[in-house]
Length: 154
Image (cartoon, rainbow, N blue to C red):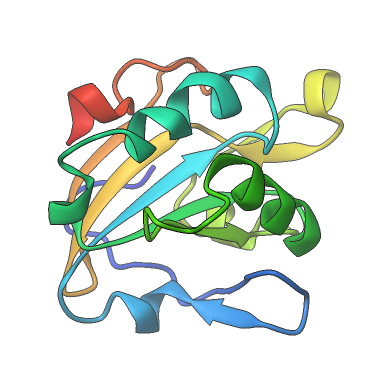
């Protein structure tokens, strides 16, 4: 499971469309950043409290580049980003990990077939500096919102 000292996986993710690749290993090779992993876009916990907690946090600006990653397709992540941050004023970027390769690389994938139809990402928050994890909080039950919540993590 992702831990302090790990590198950001060199895996292509997608922003807005399947043709727009984003590689977080490149994006976060220098400076500070935050990666927030969620089990499902538009799910109640993700949409009602987890991501809104980051959007409203006064500490978000000091986190560096901020990304939300989910095992969903790029179109879903684009729509979800618009629903939560229509004018993109937060600076948060919503990225798709459609095959779950990013989640697997950090060993934060789990079988959510019974609830969400396939393997998904555990809920987590990871702070990165110069391409390396400096702090990681993965929810012990995969989907709860405690350790990775903005008020506890930032």
